[in-house]
Length: 222
Image (cartoon, rainbow, N blue to C red; front, top):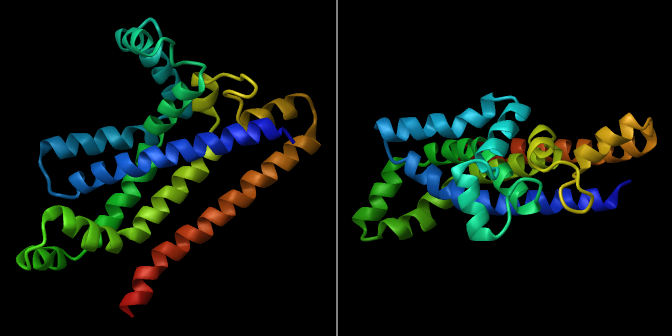
């Protein structure tokens, strides 16, 4: 078992999930606020990473954030280093790649909030901010929990984007999925099986939590 790769993987998943919790809540609450062409375009852009092959998405991120692009040069000037093949760059790539895994369940959670409850809170004098925290957010909690669990588990097992954007730097960008691939290439099936078991157990645990979160609202109504 490559414990350094496991640590990098967990750290990457925690950072990505934490950032997407804040970013996803802001984006999902705005998208749930109505229609319009701007929101429609944003929904398309958020969903696009879900439809692209991970290697293709990783390639585009590598090009967009690399030192040869204007954005990449600006980031390198501001931060003092290029983002590709670094842990911060990998976090940025994971946040972009996993937006749909967070935002779409968040949206489903906000869609379950009864609009009448929100309007009643406004009529009682609650501000929009307080209504969001005291009414909308608690009612949307199952969808938010499902989004966070899906994001965390998917980051733990991500391969294509990690390989393209992070490479294979031990202790920095080498994740568990990359380690499994290398172990199989080296015919070390024992180490590969150990790491694969961890990801399998994580996937099963995530499915249990997501199923519980999805069934909870119907049980409460009944």
